[in-house]
Length: 293
Image (cartoon, rainbow, N blue to C red; front, side):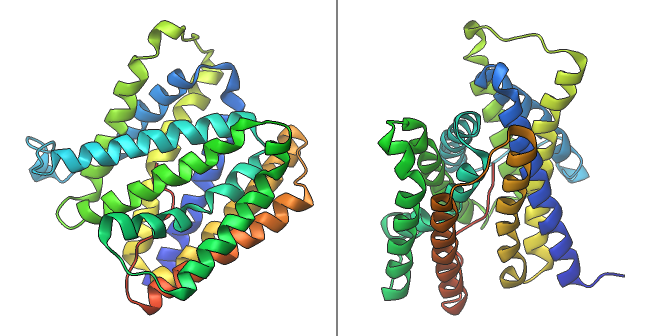
């Protein structure tokens, strides 16, 4: 029998694996319109959630008194997921994953604006180090006028506001309801792209596209379970395994080899997020959040 910390460790690990495979499939799906891929993420992302809705909530599972806050969470989540999908299709996998680690930096800044948090010297230092890392990673792109480097940054901004809204929602709303509304919003948003011309997928492609939604839905649930069973300080550092997976997948599937600038910048961003994370533990607060999309 596994201990609670071991269960939390296991859930975090399989969550990271699920997100990494989802990123791999999203990058592979470049021949399909982004809107169509969003539909598969939204529709099939609902399936895992349906299995955890309590039986006594079947008739009124959709009810909430915080509709506007759900709307803001869904809107910021849509900005984040569209941005990461575009980035994954147009940039090396390891580069995108490296830049997503900067989300806690933007969350720290947004916590000042939206939650009136007081940020001390250590976290401001971490923010500065993180921004330097982002500049180092994206410098080759700006030199060649590759504006796709802006999308991981937009993702971080969107995910940062997601962190703020989830922190507010989680005081009254169950996790499954937050995830359900988000998956529905993705699916509804995708319908506005129908006129762009969706492509009818083959049976194999249909399976792979559906896995984007199933893996995304499961990854979010497993991430939540990880934090439920284990100490946050134990499991959160595991998220940096995503960079290792991205390097391996990028090399074997697209022959992508990370540049030394990407690795140096990624190291600075990781150091920055670790400093922020450790200070949050010391101050007994949790502002930042791992991927929730």
